[in-house]
Image (cartoon, rainbow, N blue to C red; front, side, top):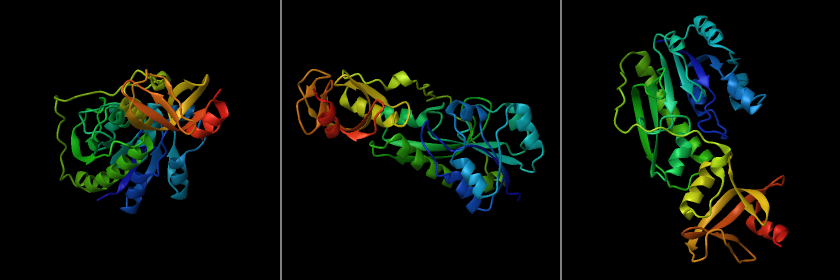
Length: 304
């Protein structure tokens, strides 16, 4: 059984998070030879990154890194490879069928949701925004459609409902790594067949814009809390406090309040606001062009 593979992506399952390369580490530890790691050139241009943790991993393990500028370049890499299968985790754009067809065993893809629910690029953020009690990972056969390929295996896991985007991404990346090393030998030996996704229960996640992070105090406190956790790192949640633009880092939902939404609850020790249903305390925040600080420090420095 050949254990040569090509890897697409950088394992960053959500915008702004970092990865410890759980899948790549698991593949190496289980004896797979990663011939090439193919990274999406467009992401590096948009993020203005010179190097990331996946490239550092490749250097450490003496793996070739490629950032092809076209499908033709990608096809040449694959044609010169001996790999019969590829693994894709967070590549950042759709793969054309012409490239998928170059692999006799196809491309398998880790998607951080319980497909067909939450297809698209932001399932982790959407899981948090929806207040879901469960998250999950799907290992599927890649097709040219948007996360519509047949499923090899899924795992559903309970979540506490307090996870940040980084925490949930790290958890699902680790769960996905275990699933991939479980199914990969069965796919290579042709003993595991994928099952087509149901047409029922299909949902799509939305593209996130910077404006989505703007706080509306007329919302429930629980909704604002989910926003802060889902939009952490990027695009972040923003508000204006004491006439100063700030990004909220951590908040705590408090007791029910009768004050009107947006009202500051007088307290020299804690920075608290009324929302539609409950008060929230801002534990930490970042004022524009400043470093992160506590709510108490912000009060001391900016309260008029």
